[in-house]
Length: 293
Image 1 (cartoon, rainbow, N blue to C red):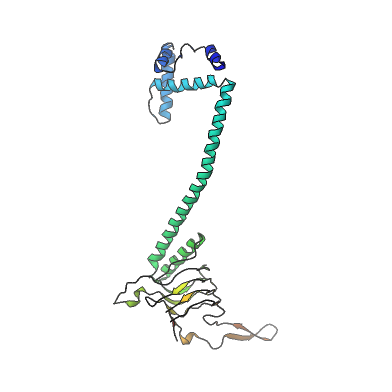
Image 2: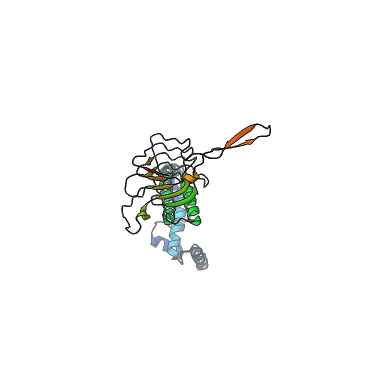
């Protein structure tokens, strides 16, 4: 009843008696032509500004009329109570949906982006696996660092051809769970070593190599030449069927250099460390591995 009284007191109640196009046309017919043209031009300019193009005057009138009716109804306390309570409920539900589904969507999107980024870096590594050059080594090291910044430390490096390289010096200190075993079963009869992982003078010293598969199985076993694992964590790693070769010329009988310090007393610094000096070999498998000197 209160809403009805308010509408009855509104000056244009008779002119907008029904929310129909006929009612709007009747309302427009009562407006001064000059005022109607000005309103129409202004509305069309606004419509063009927001990128919709010229709109019929009747559509503009509908929108304006709905706004007017909403303002009329808003004068009622009962309408405001019911309407805004409903708006609050809907708004709260929308916020809840945004928070809950937004969080899940953000997590999913982040995981997908991380997965795609890591895959891109792994593809880059794969491109340079056999390119044993300074540029190739730098690119592989850079890709490994970027992957590890994303929290992934287990890398597949099967079939890599790498020489004169130090993981520690390149800022790569964790290779846990990685694999150097080439899982490709194809064999090139002209170059049987082309599918083997070949590591020459590669230093794994002071890195974590737990659960690393350096070599496993008689197919495409890994070849090591003068590689060192000083203070390396090799827990549960595998060197099965690997060929481990060391040049005897590089093995020094004297491990320390003696000299006099400032007090005149003799002292020494250790200058040579055996390849597996102080490495953690708990659970390491050297089954069928071949050691050559």
